[in-house]
Length: 283
Image (cartoon, rainbow, N blue to C red; front, side):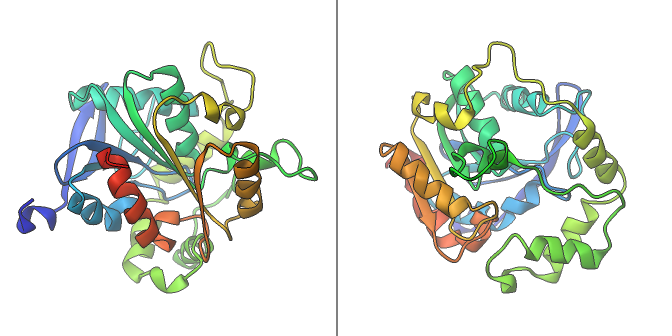
């Protein structure tokens, strides 16, 4: 690909199922849709520093602000099931019959769910730091694997935004003032009200969903599946990822040292090295 093309991120909006959706795109080749998590302030910008390296591998990398996040419109339904099915609407708007999904945090479970329910639309799945896809430890309550972050009741100050963002990385030097400013902007106003609305929404499993925990169904995923976890991530993710390796030795699961929840920042080199060939279909 031409160097000038690789260095340019296209930041645009499009209409998807009646909603204005903002997305970032870079590169050409097999399409990978990058899905951010559900923490306050999350947006497509969490992938901004990863787009060019993925484009270098010959991948069309697309990240979008999910409904109710960033610069996108609010959804008609606050349940995570809506945002999961919306991935297909987003693909339809881009005329994508099939794409790879890369899900961080809560979005990893969304990607796996969609791979199970619509295997013809999902070519590959990458999961980064999704606690709900790990088995609980023997002394851990069953719901601890998917425990939500502590909810705020007031809009955060910029100092609180910095502290929360720094708490998600092992190397705090990765957090620049610009990162904090973007995160804080995406945490205020309508986005904070959306955060509260999501917290009060009841979790409704999609129709026909198995009653088994999703982590037990990873072996049912027929598409190539790659999982990456930080050893120092919250809720003992490192120990639980090791347990998952022992229970399901066939999983392509990687545990990265000196890495917390923002795997794509803390372990950027490992992420790009693994994701590039995987998303290209050459690994």
